[in-house]
Image (cartoon, rainbow, N blue to C red):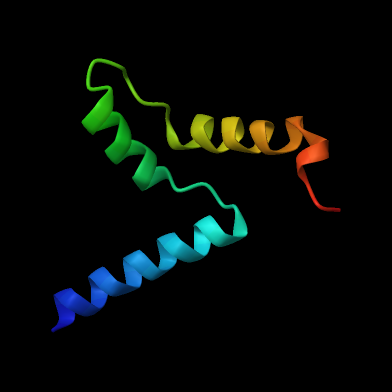
Length: 64
């Protein structure tokens, strides 16, 4: 029961982060392990910096 609740909370947190546009480092790591095992993934700090840069690089993509 507790494991199921924790799994649900993690999933809900991931969905909320996607809705508000916050980057999900754990999802990125899972993707890199599954699809690009030969590439060293970015550190959390570099990942966050690259996500912020990509977000604000295209000002026309924002609604306001």
